[in-house]
Image (cartoon, rainbow, N blue to C red; front, side, top):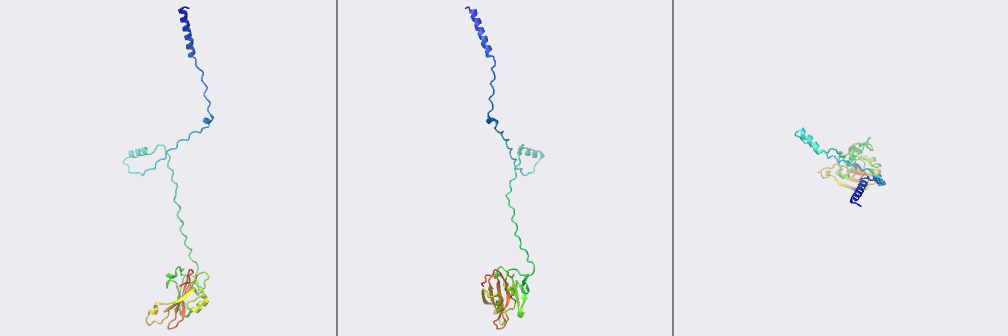
Length: 232
């Protein structure tokens, strides 16, 4: 075979190889999306930053400085801060004052509506109650407010000790004591000595000694006290 023939064959083979390399390959189909990728939720939008609290306005030199300060300090897109839940408790209700007494308060025939209840027998003083006049022209005093069901309301100023016992019953405790009048020279009037009867849950009965040299005692002071212990 001649050299010319070999050269022609080599050229034809090279041409055929170049044509095949220039052919386009068919595109491969894209893989189908998986079920997990199809059901994935969309990402939530990013939360906006909370706006910083506004600072108390200070004295600005110029309007330009004020506008610049607001632009630099406050973000362009933010949410206002939510007010904090109030933890303050409601004020306690004021205590209700007791209703004033209505109507008259009577001790037998005596009107003692102006009396106040006795809370401490040791703090009771003469003159705090209602001054009244009773039997045998005796003057006396009724202090405090009668307890419910008390027998003291049957008593009258000027009664003797025996009369009082017959109406009020026997006392829980009783005894005598002298007053300051006993130290007055040449004083022979009444009330130089007293006799005290204590009744539990009712109060006290005070009897004053008769004038002169007698030993009789007559009721001159009734003290109503429903909290009385009955002991002197």
